[in-house]
Amino acid sequence: MEKMFREAMGLAKEVSSLGQGLTLPLTSLRTHAQPRRYFGSLEELAESIRRQGILQPLLVRPVGEGHYEIVAGERRYRAAQMVGLSEVPVHILEISEHEARLLALVENLQREDLNPYEETLGLLDLLSQELSRSREEVVTLLHQMRNERRGKSTHNVMGNPETMRVEEIFRVLGRMTWESFVQNRLPLLRLPEDLREALEAGTISYTVALELKKVKDGERRAELLEEVKAGLSLRDLKTRVRDALQKRRPVLIWHREAAKKLAKLDLDRLPAEKRVEVEERLRALLEVLE
Image (cartoon, rainbow, N blue to C red):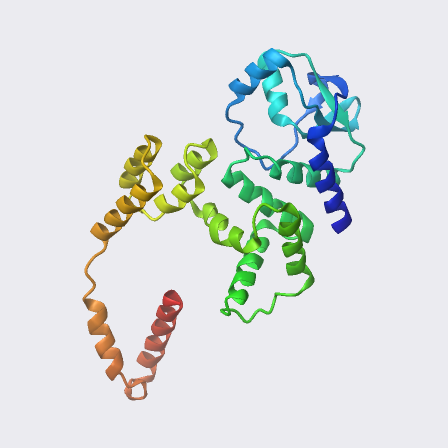
């Protein structure tokens, strides 16, 4: 698997230097699932193709009966359809479906115009394929790695073959460390829909999305989102968000009273049933406060 991954990395880096290949009719091509879901600026790419043609061939693989699956280049394929081309230049690769998926993931992750949300999903899918785990299991593993690195976990996952593979993949890709990915990218998976759509469309950065995520009031968040699109800086946004959170934060007096009562609490003197209930509630509270 590691050798296959490195070969995919090498081929992805060579894609930009490949010359013109064969040409195939658009009708013989079919798309393949990939990290990129948002194909913004197709009009701009279509205009470029109209003037200069397709400069970088699509990577495809044969799938039988004269049909080919697009491994890399779906955006060029869609723009070619818009322009009305009947055929496109391609490079045909004799690779398996597994190798095609791996190459598609790696090739897309090398592109500078992949937005942060799609990049996050792409990296998770790459890790999922390399570790033979679901996306959710990969997320759990990454959190376990971070917690152990911070001394907050007893899972002892660091140093096992899976975590070593994770570290290797991030090192070879060279885009960010796995720690940075957990800290700055995994939170994007929990973005409200309005922020996710804006991030995918490229109208806000991931740092802005994470800042706006703090605002739970949908109406106020929408107002701030429009201000950002109109040119509000991240620095000024942080000030607005801080002010919005302070206005919503109630003055907590009850917690002081609760603390006084807890300080005087003697569990041994409580009835058994009530003691169990108090212990359960305190345990739940401690988990929230960790």
